[in-house]
Length: 289
Image (cartoon, rainbow, N blue to C red; front, top):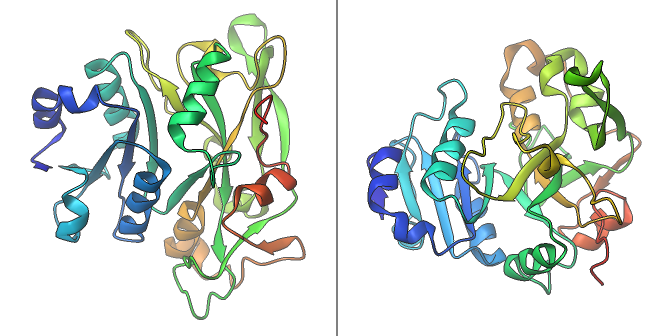
């Protein structure tokens, strides 16, 4: 079904939200929108929302199985504002958010769907999952000028690191069980990335509740939900493989003509399989075997 705006959707579709978990996809352009939506339908999300400009074309067959919402995706803080409106409208569901050309992977996702992941994580008494955003890029920019190719996708197999997350309320001592993660294209081409956009961690799959807010740095106002593990053992983490940074570096005039190839000695072809991400240490299964 199609809605003229987020206000109309929230006012009329609360029953749909209650059928979650919900996947919210914001399409900043028309690149791989259909494949992104298909990925989340296949992953097991019963409710998929698309926030997109009215001019983006979508096959009628795809529109029939999602909720399409016309939205100004280029407004400041568009995604964060949209997520917070969904949290307020549906304060007891599991919610996931991403942009187009971003694909969520979790351990064993080839045989276990998103409902099974959430069920296990809930049994662990956890309400949020830490996700690493892993940059994808086409191996041949001559053939794929916008750096997007599902068939020729590559990722960095090393170059990732973490720093303690300072707590401004506690003399900038590191927060407990929270880290800022870096790597990928945002690290290798950091001269083209503003400092506040260099982190690669997001809390993008979590359980909504009254008063909860998503912040512009993709963390939540409940600090425990920003932790990478519970106090007693490691938890599952997930990976969001994303062409978004590569697209931006290729479309921005300030970086497009400085970058002729994203590949380097530590590039590897992406196999579109969770085992590769676990083998590279880019997500972990925790106690889920």
